[in-house]
Image (cartoon, rainbow, N blue to C red; front, side):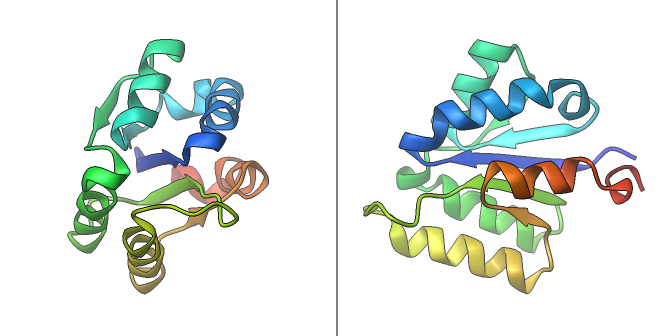
Length: 125
């Protein structure tokens, strides 16, 4: 069963996201992929993944994704979040993480937790 997976990465973790997505490309291509603007462009350009792009996080992309979660249109969130760097849209980031928790969306915040989600037998159910 295809899942709606959203991919997000803060600036200093975008290379890590590309590297992780490259290793998981065969699994990711079996699902509907979405991403914030810059992350989506990187993944599309570097890995030729088909991705629906929202706005960049600071320009409202996090809020757009939160809205999709509340509408039941996102099944999994892979968000390589940098909790040690200040972000001008930190309030939006926290709101996104909160809404994912409220709606019980499996959320990975680093490559190891993303690997657990992608290797779960529940991914294809």
